[in-house]
Image 1 (tube, rainbow, N blue to C red):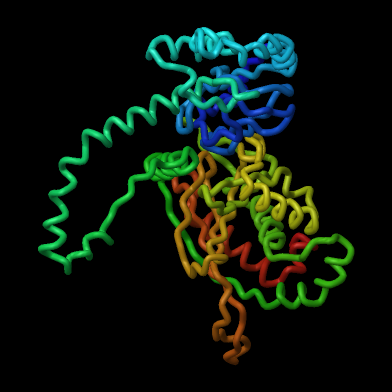
Image 2: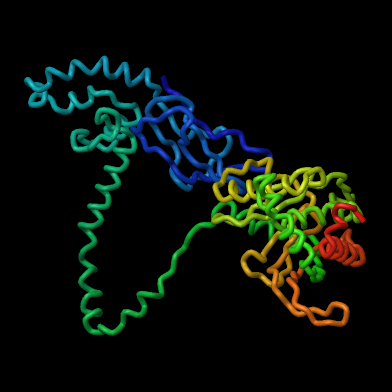
Length: 415
């Protein structure tokens, strides 16, 4: 039985996907639910599973191809088909007697062979006995024939190309001290779908928003003291470490409550106020930056926030986040400090109107009560859309975060 494997339905915001990699090749036995192929979209990597046990018969797209919802990816012959082939195979037994000498070509065509394979062999006038089959019981697959044609083409090129080779040899002998240019190579690598989408979004943000950034610094000493005092009991009870991000998420939610315009977005000539707090947490991966969304962050306690962030980070690096987890969001937090950044101006994540940038925490001398003391300090940057957020609101919002973080008791008392 032939089963067609197609591109799954993509969300409305995603028009197509790029074929990232095949986990199987034609002729391989496949098991139900194992990953057959990876598709890369502008947000996540989709793993297309094998629908049923069988043999991968045909592959209709190569690595790097762009595909859309419903496009045919591959054809699988279920285990019913190989079983039929095996029952038809016994007539091969008399072959050693006289058939190989009499008519080698018809005998090879008599073996099980897909229509696409037969068509390729006839079109190119090939002898199937010269092609090594990688399918079940050595049967030929379409990919086997294509590989054979490619290798034959390469051999032909190699035979016609040796003439120019002698020319560079004398030059190399004349100038034996000129190996330096070998280190000046260049490589051209296509952008991944995610990287291309990031680039598109960054340009969009610069062209469609009036972005301005304001800065402040925060003394983290009281948060450090609070963490040190309760870290062990927190970890013992909740099985998760008490990090810093939960404090920042809590402070941001409280700040957004007080300044709803920071949590709003622009839609044409309207301002859309959001009465919920979906906080995006920027996560860096090998493929680029992704921003999973912490839904209803105001309803989560410290432990739930820490667990969600750790889970996001792990699954983002494994490419396991879903479209839903990367869609939406009313405000974003990004932390360049984990890479050592001291100060930066984060770019907005449209349609959001503001983003908070965290930076490296460094011990610096500060003045407290007329005395110079050493404290762990962090610079915060708030980029905002000046079309709807005035400087007074942005600066006051950021100063509110400073107050809440420098006296974390306020987070619990909401004062």
